[in-house]
Image (cartoon, rainbow, N blue to C red; front, side, top):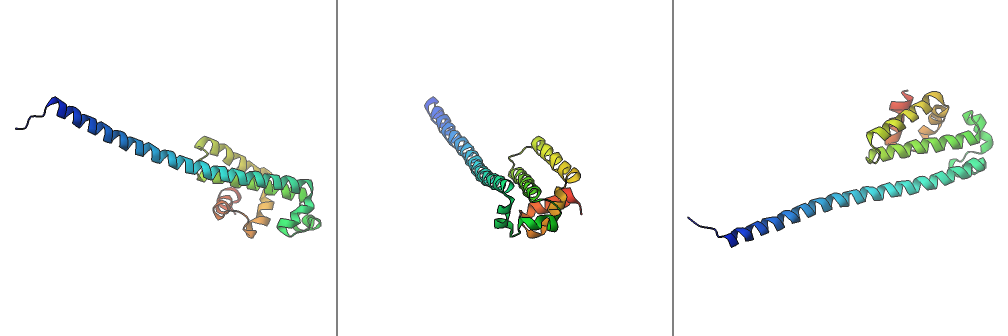
Length: 159
């Protein structure tokens, strides 16, 4: 039978402690790196959202600027869509906001409670407002993320 002395037991305990500390450090480092990656993606999306927000402000101030991105002259809006150019620009803005909320939900930035609030707000917009008419006009152009388009068609429009 082998007897292990006090110093050997202490050395073994120290080695186990060091290895355990290294494993915990690696585990938490990996989680931290994953969180940083998600934060970076979210920052990029928020930056793009701010740029889109500014573009929409410009178009709402001067609807003729919409021709740059849509190819449709503002004089054709009432004939083509049945709404004014400013209403169209605002509708795009609302749809983009909804798409941004959807993207944040997919990336797990919005928790269940926040998402429930956004979902209810979107449903109210599509039920009570005229945004559903705008959606039917712009959706075939593929201007939004396909997953978002499927979500809106399935959950909001239910065509």
